[in-house]
Length: 68
Image (cartoon, rainbow, N blue to C red; front, side, top):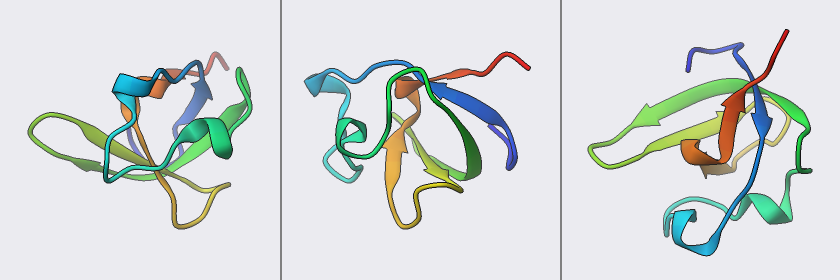
């Protein structure tokens, strides 16, 4: 996901919440659209940082691309 990409928060189940990432259920609203600030790609997961939620990262599996 590139900077500026619009994504929709779709779900979070316990196993998907990475130890180095934040729990999206505490910060995001289901089905709301957010803007990607940047991503960090790792060997087993990708961390997504959002423009709307500063200093928090989330596992990329919690998002779908938003329809424009």
